[in-house]
Length: 137
Image (spheres, one colour):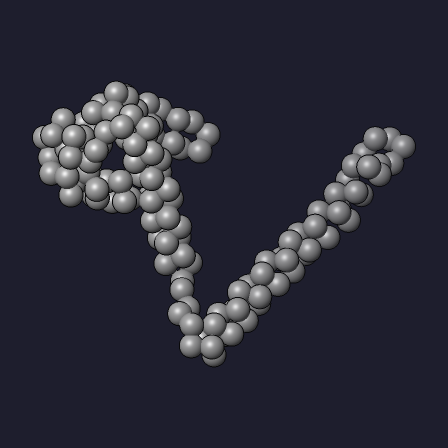
């Protein structure tokens, strides 16, 4: 890193920080332009154009399905049927199927706890704040 003989960094900051900020703004503008062009191409091709919120919602649904699939794998590894788990939980087999197909957002914590306990596990609920996590239940 460049600095003067007295150890002052001011000239480096005066030159480098504005340059970095300009490059970052250019990068963001380029991203926005690419995203806009991609949306235009999709629209021209008759394909659906999704907003950032719609894309995030789709990713959240996919994540829920993947997590739920793992629960179903645990059930199968233990040679349990959905009906057996449902009886243990006190719910219907279609409810167990719904849980295993990613409908976790609509499931209450008590229902998920019963499902996990029916498989011999223990449910933990964690609040994640990015820089800190807290076990809630």
